[in-house]
Image (cartoon, rainbow, N blue to C red; front, side):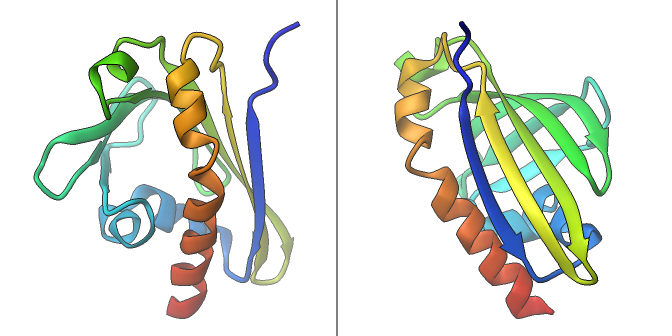
Length: 142
């Protein structure tokens, strides 16, 4: 049986488009995603990098699916240390589900972690805080 991965959900008072912008814009990610700026063209096969303030990469991956503003799937390689950088890439799926006018469910699934045990241990405690901060900055900007 395969590992089901890590699943995190949060309700956000905002439009799918604004949440998508927060996920894919470096100006937004700096405010909630550990001071990293995400960079990508968001096209299938394109590279995605989360840059630290000093310009080094914190994480990187490849865009597997991009369906704005509903679904984004990327591979994920943690670069926080040499052991993590050697792990097999995992996968992160962002899903935005509109529940009512200006109210959405954001679900983040980080899976395919079987070959990335150090990444699993590191991110299992970080994702919930990141999406809670995302909610805070998005709702404050409304």
